[in-house]
Length: 479
Image 1: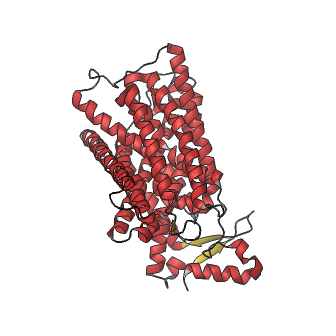
Image 2: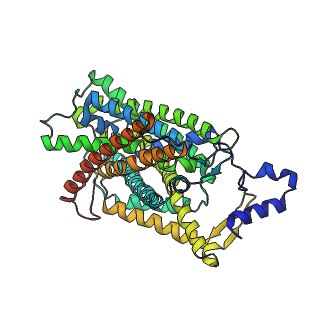
Image 3: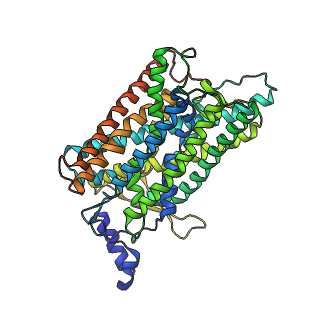
């Protein structure tokens, strides 16, 4: 008997028959309870991540015209393709069709063939990379707090250089503990806390930018971005391409959209709820992105930092910067889990199907938790596998601590295939849009244009990594 069947059997045995439908969904799984609010919180947690910190730098490379224009373009494309993707949650009928629990399930049921393996590989590589990027970003914020306090204790005499490695290890330990939460829908509270934190540090960054502009009385920057006097012509080109990748990364949440949609209750139809949640989330995040990126550029001009909050340096009020960096750390702790849960679920499902008789993989030990009615179910395979995964991402982060470059590569890698190509292809198949019709041509043109953007953004970020590696010593990076 499979896990799903066993779950249905247990539920139906424990509950009178007339109440079974109140506790389970149309597929026999436990009833979902997600709403527009919880779905929006999940999306905001995923979207307003470490990407917001690099937007001032990205706008500085592109200038006052191209910077905001590129940001608006990505927000529109992401919203449109996300709307297409929500229609692919159920195969066939949008109300009673077969549910797809993950992004890969949707590709398998609608497209099938080699595209399933390609999608799974890209999705999980992207999620793996995001976990590395978040580890790097969290360590930078931890160090910023420590260096700020050290600087002020020394009266400004000590530059307080330090290694990022201990802070990455601290972040990894916290993620090992949180990763033992078994299922995606059990971390709704973590997403809400993380969403609040994202508004906190974005708001502080925005406030400091406004204060700096008000103090100087001038808006820095230019229409065309960083000047050739500050960088060479070649650097200007590569940095502009990398900036496009950074902005793409700031909108990378389509990769877990189906998983978020699978937590939403029905009725009403899940696609309708998710479209409202997506519209609300992208509108809020784009407004924040515009304000944070623009005010950061207005404050620093050509010298806008890769991480906005570190750009304000050790200046007063340093306690406010400490609060902002603490909020970033709390947010990234939550966001790391939101992005890693699909990887955890995939490997655990595969292992259970491959070795169904193994006690190490399938057996759960019930451990009483003081203050909770239900015991914690400890699974040894989950403990070992998730711990090993977090340790691997931490070690790689210590080897390649280049925040802006890693963010750019991740944005380029995930944007076209996961945010554009697969949603467009699935929508064409699902809605049976005829070949060479005007709508088919428009969707294909959108996909090709986004492919070109991903290629040039990826090239710019790879060049950035190559330049960084020329002066880099493994595990020896200090700030």
